[in-house]
Image (cartoon, rainbow, N blue to C red; front, side, top):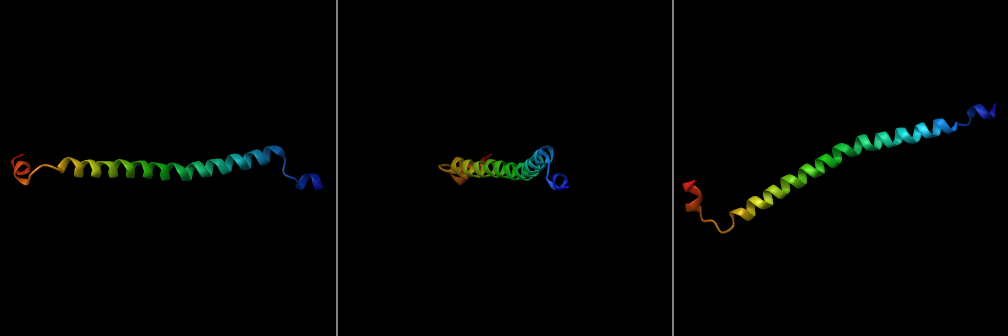
Length: 62
């Protein structure tokens, strides 16, 4: 009877796979948001850098 209460090897493997799946499902949007934030942040930095040295008169003509 005690053998029936012990989890088998396949159940332990399935539990590990399920944990990995949940971890991946949580991390995918987190990493995507981080990458999009880096892209946005770098865009803002380059916009600021590209504006340095330009006068307002030149910018208003375009």
